[in-house]
Length: 424
Image 1 (cartoon, one colour):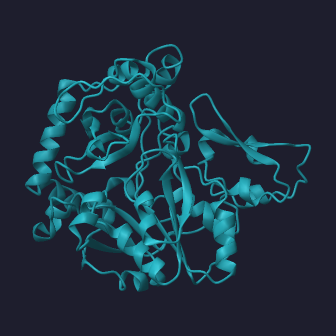
Image 2: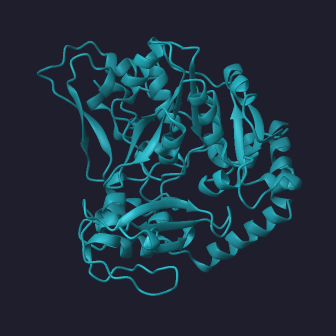
Image 3: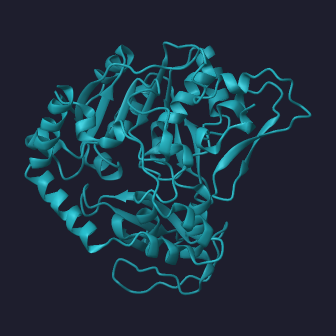
């Protein structure tokens, strides 16, 4: 029964919840703020479908093996789309192709309370909700069930999500559909939804003197709590005002006055923002992210996306400060859809793991992760994050050396030599 699983072997994909024929599985939030399945044993009939569709069930007949991979760099032709996209605008172009063929797109969007859930979009205008990174675990809700219904009717479906969510979908469906295109991304890991909510409340809702600062440098005071009257009008984890590589965490306020629309309330360089620091330090990722079942293309996706951070190392001319997407094509179906995409596409003859470690390696738990969750019960969240993620001088020196090595392409050369040595 899924409820008896170790938390480290539950990725929160919700395949079990949606597959249960008696609807006896619900989700409950644990003390770390993650959602896990809970079984009402009075309704359970012991069919074990929940176990059969679990991505962590290695004995499952629906388990997926590693697929082929072809690597591409991509840049969208539209400067407006590039500006609003996290990297090179590949998702928007691919989703547009699907919708123009009468299909639908599933992806992650913000709710009114700024939690994240999956929704279905059937028009190009609606893609704005799905565009851009959201560094919080998304609630799938009933999207697997809804996607299956549409697939059975012959509708073209693009389903996007984390690798474990795509693997969950594949295990849920238990068969391949020719009109289903699955797209995931190289995943660093998912932060706690509970911590995200706590951060928003502390930053924007609890204090009358929030740490907010408008674009002109003037302090902004908020008196309302984070609810239906929240001052937040937009959140961008990857604002590219300063460029793709210098992305910022930006929050804008909503306003009834048009001229005042989208006033910046908070704008942090990503590595200086408390929530982003905690995320990038791996201090509050889901336990299963440290033992991910979907690395190295094992999700069963047709296409995998990522930022092409190493593009200057392999093709300096293709680089753009506005962003470049990495596309890893795993199937012929993925290749067929790639050929329909507009924009600049170039195949890259490199091994993916040399350019993005997260493709093949799981995150490593922060050494003070346990202390973090113990302390945030009684202390200010932002203060605890700042204290536990503070870099030592040696770590800062290492970071800047790494940046210099990447800029002069030395890092890529070292990785290639290391890979050749390991193959001997």
